Structure formats: C-alpha cells, structure tokens
Image (cartoon, rainbow, N blue to C red; front, side, top):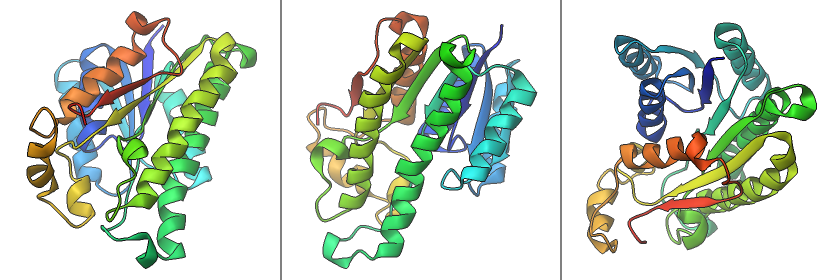
Length: 248
C-alpha cells in the first residue's frame, strides 16, 4: 500500500520542506496552497524529478467545502490517506491586542484553528479503524508562540497555536485506540516568509542572536522532526510535542 501524506500550506516554508522530505521518503504527496500556484508547482516538480509522486491543489483551509474537495482529490489520485500534516497557517501584521479588530481575529482563527480541526476530522474519517481505515498519523504544526504569547506582535496567532496544542492532546487520546497517532511540532524563530507577511522581513536576524543557540532555525530542521513523528520510528509516540526552537 502506498504511503500517502497530505500537507496543507505545502507550497512554501515548512510545508514545502516537509513535502520534499516526504517525497524522498517514498510518500505520495498531496499539498495544498492558498495563492501561490507557481511555488506549489515547483515543489511538485522537484518531487517528481527525484522519482516521487506529488500533486498540488488550491484550497483555503478556512473553507470547509474546499477542504472536502482537497481530501477527495487526494483519495482519487493516491488512494487511502496514511498521514496528515496540518501546516497551513497565517498571522496578521505585528500589533498589540488593543489594536486588533474582529475581522483579523476571525481570519486568523478560521485558518489556524477551524482549518486544523476540519482537516483533522477529514483525516480521522479516512484513517480510523472505527471508520474502516488502517490507521495513520497526524502532525500539527503549532508554534513556540503558544508557550511564549508573542506580546506586542501577534497574541492572536499565539492563541490559535495554543488551541492547536489542545487539539493535539485531545485528539491524540480520542483516536489512540483507533490506530491514529497525533503529535505536534512547535517551531521557534524559523527563516520563512511568515515574518515578511507580519511586517518584519528581518525578524529572524533581529531575534536569532537572542535564542540560546544564537541563531534562527531552518525549515528543513522542522521538516525532519515532522517526518520522524510520521514514521514508524515514532510508533509509541502520541499526544507529544517536539519544540524545534533552539532552546527558546
């Protein structure tokens, strides 16, 4: 049986690095993207160039119908799902809570929290032995912000990642006897495009020296942790967190 992984937000950053690693590890890779079709196509091409199988599909994970369409496309292309990486996420520009409006909060929570729940639901319905599946693994991409709060920058984003941590713990216990392991990684200051989208492209350079390891991290370093959690080497690991944050 094929190993099949669906990675949300797989066109850039941690998602792209994970997709490339998964392709090298023999997974069929379905990746979603929200806007950047060209970047997603490049990831797919890179996987295919090394003999792997991959497909990308535009899907906004804050939209339930688009999530259903994404998972159904994966079913048709590759067969039974064996792994999900809940990676898609966004934040707003750096600001204090007293300057946030409801529209921003709805947008960030809809993608980071509701999207993660709905993707997890779709995966469980396919992988759970209770639903006729053969088991599998889910890795949620949280953030060190869930522990640190991100004051003065994006407390809303940090709060959504706290919710992702709770989802990880609760779902892990809920489906542990149904053949599904659920874990999370909590990246710290990682060199990806998310910093530019929040208004500070040089954030890694500014904060990296303050990390105990005195540098920012790389997307590949997070992808390595994600792939270990998906692998058989982590067969007795569920409801757990790997902080990939340089000691922060």
